[in-house]
Length: 311
Image (tube, rainbow, N blue to C red; front, side, top):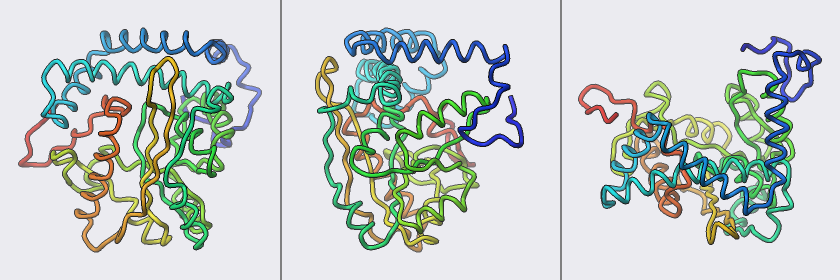
């Protein structure tokens, strides 16, 4: 469903009240009800929905299993299956965590810790912008909320095709992020970095070789985006790794935000070396909580001539 040409993110339109949108409004009300449920019910629902998704989303399950086989060859076949199932469970639990971040943020009080905040503060004190190198976590926007308790993050986002959904998500995220930047708005991204903002950016998906290079990811050649190199070169921003994850007992979870020292010499003159170094950072992060990552994306789908097909 194309958006009207005059549509502005977060803007309400009277057309949203038309019958064709009623099912979405009903769904949103249902999600808001889920957001106020006790956590004991939420995480049990998340586990049940995750098991259901693992069972019936055959293509996603196959991709997840294949990714884990490639990236964790030390795991047995049973460990791969168990962890693949947990990926789906963590994703569904992440939906409830995001709903809590949007509608019941007080639930996170006393559950969040941070490490390395000084690296962002120091860079901004020097007048630099900060490009936060992160991952596509199953925590979704809950991760952004964790960060927002300690600093003001901007986020790069892809607009929804449905204008009502786009408005609702944009407004929910506005309570978390200082600014939301359309992924096509390169000028806005550059401007905010030059103005000293901290922007969450995830260079961890396969967008082909028009936007990247082949570089090892968990030892497997993968198409790796290089757009962040151009951003860093244009803005002189600091590249700072960011990772957040859930830990402890699921019945009483805790959350940790890990900020690492700025990556030195990024960008360098060698884009393959830069991509390799960034991938190594992401690998190290993912090993902390392997199942809290969206492994159901086809990370190794681009296979140039001479590379074997993996899916």
